[in-house]
Length: 113
Length: 110
Image (cartoon, rainbow over all chains, first blue to last red; front, side, top):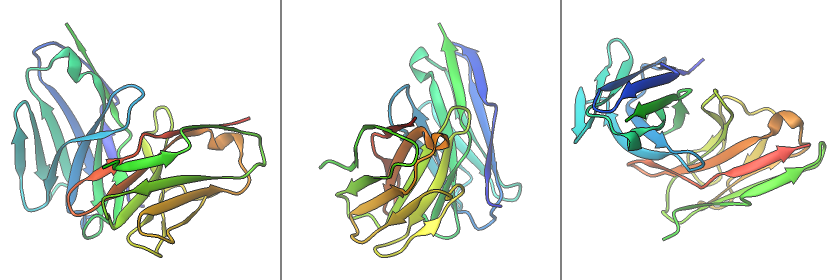
């Protein structure tokens, strides 16, 4: 069925290092790929998103790349800081428009000072 | 502007009891979603709606029912609660840009 796979499940880095989280999706009709950050005990919040007509998008220290042919997309965080520690979720909108929004299983990022 | 509001925030149910979780949004969004979040399993889609009067099954719909009688509200019902439904439930709504989440409902079934 339709699903989104996310790796790794946990990621530990030193402050200042880069972090990369990867996701693959199954529905070739998907056209919207957001990334959410969830801090402990809080709701998920959007940090960056990309649509299928764009290959890369950057916002300060975070960037997302999309390879539609391979059906995978990645989140890149540079110059990581302790406050980047959280759980990150990728998602894909299956079908046209928003429709069915399916999430990956999450990556727990720990940034050590 | 409240965004997405879930009611209640916490609830303890006994096995076999029923309850309804309410999600309300004030952003005139067409799309609304119910997810459950369990450790190590991410956000799993229970049901979703693409507009007033419509509902569709997600990844884990069994044991749940939903209704979208008004555009701003999306109700999630548990007819006969089971311990396996102990979870944190999140509602989300989306227009044409991004999806916004409610604050979550922590449900414990004993």
